[in-house]
Image (tube, rainbow, N blue to C red; front, side, top):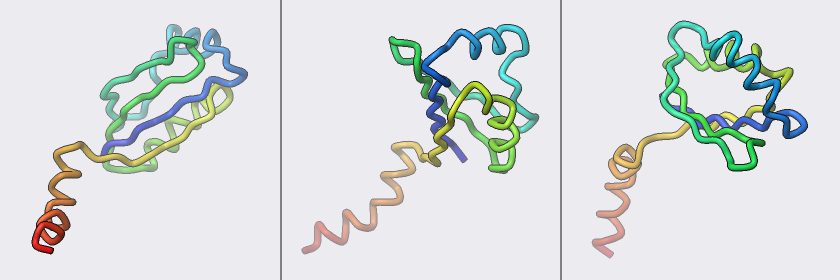
Length: 96
């Protein structure tokens, strides 16, 4: 399953976050895969895609960062998966 992680750096301060990342790495448990990330140009938030089968891995990972980051975790699907899921409804509405 894919998850969009919105990281709000505490007090809008990226320095402690990047210091820990530089010194300790991502701190992700085995089985949690980093897909990609994008940071706002003011360096206050990060949008990160992670993948795992067990959501407990996300809880373990965010616990290691919660002193520096407030997290929003949103389950997401790819556009292709969304199209496949909505396909029957599209056909149903097209017949009307």
